[in-house]
Amino acid sequence: MTQKFILFLSFTFLLAGVLNAQAKFNSKSFLITIDGTSNMHNWSTKATNVNVTGDFTVNNSGLQKINAAKVQIVTKSL
Image (cartoon, rainbow, N blue to C red):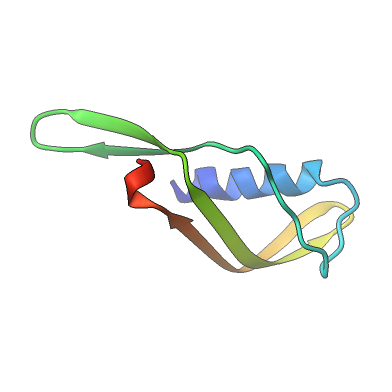
């Protein structure tokens, strides 16, 4: 999941156009899928209510460093 999240953030920032470390970025559309297992079967669900905030270091070539990140998923949206 961590690798998918980092790829998602990288892709979002690359599509944002001109990158500036002090800018606020918004993504209106993205997909987070949570995969899990139980003693009976594997399962997968999509999150429909997600809020991502963080402190990212970016430059003209893209995402340079993730200083802090917070992902909130409303459990009722799963």
